Image 1 (tube, rainbow, N blue to C red):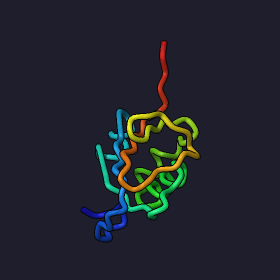
Image 2: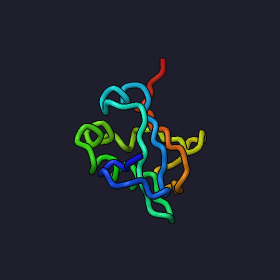
Image 3: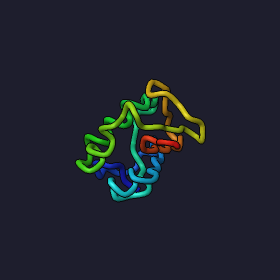
Image 4: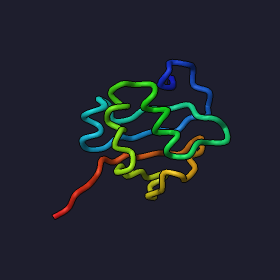
Length: 96
């Protein structure tokens, strides 16, 4: 497995899952991303994903409106993501 920059997996990774329109815009359902052992806040994780891929950068530009869950629990952009976590990213949702 490799991180988004192509380096060998270090064991300090998170699994990122994309849903709905984000999955279509980015062109993948899931990816592994190497992160520091101390973790990253959600907003920094999204920035790192966008910095590595132009399609992801465009899709994730709606960061203030995105919904993110870490290990199946909705979280805030300043919550910490740790190695081994599963991060699900959802596009803005509307209801009616």
